[in-house]
Length: 149
Image (cartoon, rainbow, N blue to C red; front, side, top):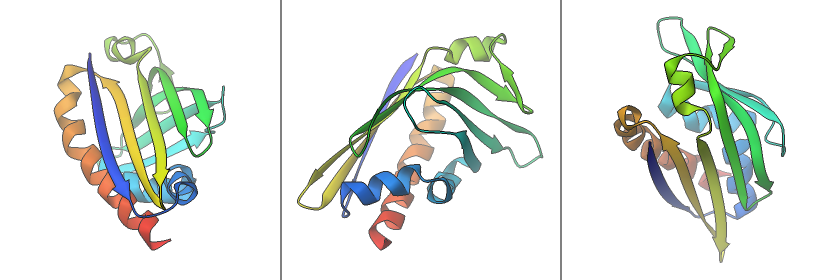
């Protein structure tokens, strides 16, 4: 398992960055770097959340977990329980077991109207390279969207 960290500085107040990152409509926009990506569920503490996407060949999949921390405009964390494959929750496959118990978090700090977002996640060694390409691009897109609001 690898721990990855990505950081972006955004010229917008933390409240704007928070809502741009987590609201459903803008979430889909900045996460388009990951493909057709969306979530169902809630970012509320204790809620279940699913991150779903389509691979371009009509196959849908993703991951599901629950929100283990939510301090508005400061920090939110997901603990993954398994994967979603064609709409079905999977906790038994090798891949589902490899991601169960991993975390992904977003931290937000503001200084004079400029917000720094730090994304930390645990992933398999095999997926680290993909995330090293996609996450920086996604955060640049988040920056562009939030700075226009």
